[in-house]
Length: 410
Image 1 (cartoon, rainbow, N blue to C red):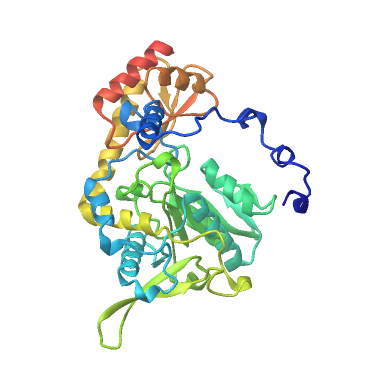
Image 2: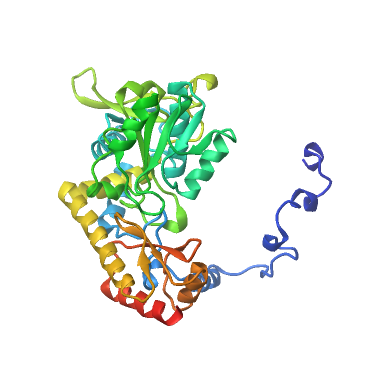
């Protein structure tokens, strides 16, 4: 195998991996241990972690600490929902298809769009799919960024698009779409209507990216957009060290044939009974590769199920109440922070995440010092700025602990 790919040794194969993360001298592991000993060893390693449950936690930046009811886990483990990884003979798995259909319905209702697909990997790949779809629909070559986009989302776009395709600002006659993150990576909410008018002037599509679907519990649905995509992790899914999470994708029906991924529809069988079918599947596994509209997405079946169960448990009123709790927690946190001498809040309008400007130039150093006090203060930005998130899990004593610790280190 080494000869075939043109390297002389294992060391040469791994030479591109930085030495700082390479284990040069092997691992000092015992030749064997019993199951009980291994469990104790691994448990000891796990206890060294400091999780969101272990103290005040104000880190967001696209992945949010929220409560997932025990009922969600209990329901998704029921035998009715056990199925293969992906339904290649989908009509056999009516339960799976019904869950997908209901997930699509939730997403379409929340986003104000006419159709939604069966889910995608995560918000970053959903954004890439939206932009690739806009390029196909408009047959144009450029993409405008209207506000600061999550770095992971931006990195994914840069991976899939030509080098000079992305730019910041308003569109021109060669612009396929405006990518509008709302809220932006810095927590600022956006005016959909204004950017839709800007798009209409040049024929560009409006792609609204929502990195936290719960924001739609308070903010208006982006129904003027052509495509709405993003991340739904905050409902039904824990942070799980960054994944697996749940991308969503919705659009206007006129773009249905260009929409990536799967689409489940409701029909009737020969006896007139309600049934569910895989209406659209434009992945390489199902059609000719050159006709496929996607090669980086599939539907996150289990994650979509967990989301749908949690949404059904919440209902419309519960969803809105949960959103209010998040916003109120952020307001209490912001009010407490600005009471500290030299601290200001830069974000003018926010849902549950905002920028706090600290009276120093190194927010990363502040975060490190607070971490030693068992407080996860947020995501450090340049210029002494700190991106702070609060959720329904944020207690008043957490805010007090954050403020007290900040006063000590500033």
